[in-house]
Amino acid sequence: MGITLFLDYRKRQRLKALEKIPFKEEHRKVLLKVPHYKNLSDIDKKKIERSMIRFAYTKEFIGIKMQITDEMKIVISFYACLLLLHIETDNCYDNLKTIIVYPAPVVLKNVRESGGIYTKEDFMIDGQSANDTVVLVWHDAKFEAYHLRHDNVIVHEFAHEIDFMDGEIDGVPPLERSKYNEWTSVLYKDYKKLQTVAAKNREWGKYKLLGSYAATNEAEFFAVVTERFFESPHSLKSHFPELYKELRDFYHIDTLSLVSK
Image (cartoon, rainbow, N blue to C red; front, side, top):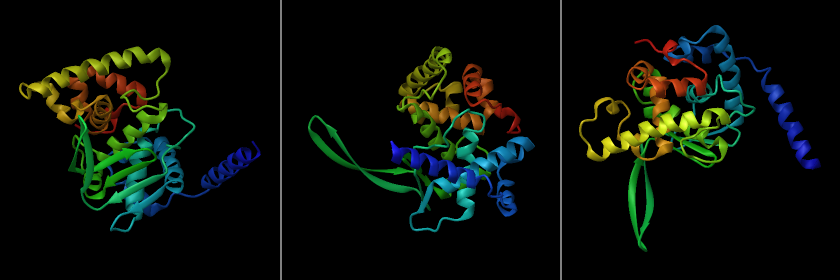
């Protein structure tokens, strides 16, 4: 008990010290290249800058065959904190310890088992979220951060981190009990329809916006629709108004105001 109290005290003191660190003007110049930052209100800009300092100083950034730069920390921290900007939470991805950054897509080895037969296979990733670590590929992350399109690997991987905040990666982030049924009903309905379309691989219609990867499982569906919510909200609201509403109510932010048509 004594050790726990001591560690909690040290954590509180460290966080208090971080509040005194000013946000550097040269870092703000990097943010001005990020479309979402430019359209935030002045109040939200100050709020997210404080969150970014806390995030950057409490996570370990590791570069693989590359040096971690201030730009990398700023861009990654911004999008991680944007997702939590209006969510009331006492933690800033407390379970997350490490962000590993690769310069280009990385090939990982995987062993699959089926009926007692084990096979090795290679697969390429541009991002991954597992346990207390997020893996990102800077080549893709940088381009997507500065150029609005449907995809944003940083948003995708941190959506997984939010999904896991309740202890399970199942496409259902921490929700108020009163909102659980509506959330699961709306998302599960579109997820199952997407699965049907993806299996046939024809007549995609509006589901082309979500793509086949979102049909992998409920967790990937949540991560992909979160990408669309922040990157192409006008299209998402036009084609999936109920889905847009659920995400807006969860993140407590109307992303239409952050992204021009």
